[in-house]
Amino acid sequence: MKEENERDMPWICDKCKEKLVLCKVKANYLGGNFEVELMKCPQCHNVFVGEDLALGKMLMVEKELEDK
Image (cartoon, helix red, strand yellow):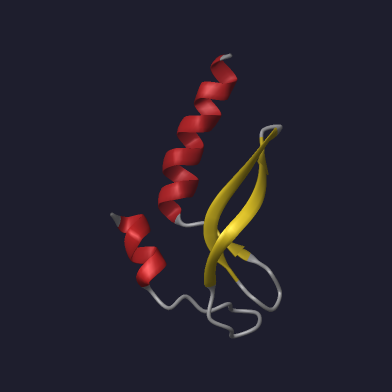
């Protein structure tokens, strides 16, 4: 639920002061390539990775990949 709230909030890029937009981005994580929807600055293209994703889903994926 927290991730949904992050998408609804008007996140602003600290560098450019532009409103972040939700879009598909390509991510490379532990040798795997993924396409995910994340908040991204339309000007400098910095991507916001929320706490739930960084400490939740990504940690779970990391542990599963390490076990293989």
